[in-house]
Image 1 (cartoon, rainbow, N blue to C red):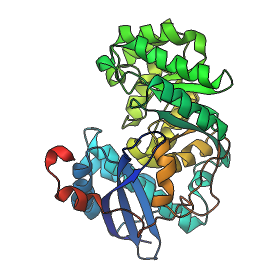
Image 2 (tube, rainbow, N blue to C red):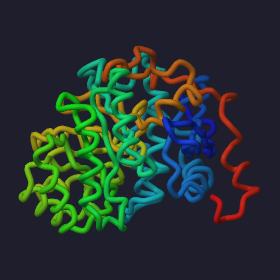
Image 3 (tube, rainbow, N blue to C red):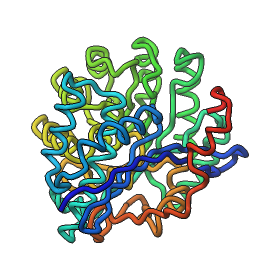
Image 4 (cartoon, rainbow, N blue to C red):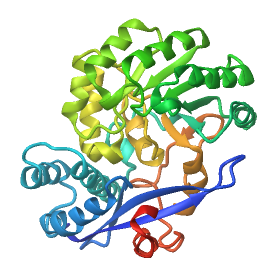
Amino acid sequence: MKITQVEATMHRVATQVPLLEAPVVRKFLLVRIETDSGIVGWGLTAGSQRYVVQNMINNECRELLVGTDPLATERRFDELQAKLNARAQTGAFSSALSAIDIGLWDIKGKDAGRPVWQLLGGYSNTVPAYTTFGLRAYSREQLGEVAKELVGKGHDKLKIRVGEYGNGEAPDEDAARVIAVREAVGDGVQLMLDANYKFKLPHAMRLCQLLEPYGITWLEEPVWGNDPRLLAILRRKTSIPISAGQNEGSLARHRELLMNEAVDILQPNVVHLGGYTEGAKVAALASAWNTPIANGGGWPLYNMHLQGAVANGWRVEFHMDVWNSAPMIYRDPPLPENGVLRLPDAPGLGLEIREDGFQESLETVERHQPAGAR
């Protein structure tokens, strides 16, 4: 089998979430990989640096891939690294590599007649799922209202964004919002927090101090840049588990988090990390440290394959808008029921792209907008 074509295209979907009038827009990049056997593989990466990523795939990676064996995933990964990223930078290259590698594993699974999660290890055909709902646009009262609504529908694990007030310098307000949710849903629901790098260390420590009595499952990426030294200091000073890694683009960066004893939970995301080829190595590395992995950064329908493949895989993240937009991108996608996601038995990723189901392509939409509106 040989690769005959590789094409990256950008897209967007807009969905509604409870209590908010303005839709949530999610941007992403798809990669279609065609082969001379007729098998087509699909990969995806998120919308960050999307113009650079698309250009890199279509004008640099494509010429290195066409005519090669798509089943030799390790070799394709290594050759792209050697020829386009010899100094092991991350950023746009890691995103491009992620989308390509995911597409190649989709082909590999379809050729073998097996789902990717089985090829990667096949540990479990179900993974726990949690729901990220705690948007800044919600007031304290609205947070509690939406949380109760979600719990009533079977969502038993919820995540709230923090660090978005006063440029990350208002941990007391963040704590009050989290406490409002805890009081609304009771002690039986797991609560996770995501700071998205927003806090300086003293403010992260203050937030932990305020919330230690409230049974927080983890605090995700609390300090700027995922600085391993600062994360390790924070971890030693709080009983709240610390997690990080969702946007790290290499095995080496995840190694730094483990070697510095900076995290209790490692969070590789296959759409940023370099796909399943690198994701499997991160999972094995975490296992050597007796550390669980959990999906942060969304895109659960791709990360579910890694989480279900390995013994230390823990759970996947569904943002509310991802939950609502999945049927717009795929035909009959798997969705969680009562906090559990059942993995597909279909070959490859088990996802059928709705090629006719998207809104306008992102290129078309943005071509007619001023740069500031993008």
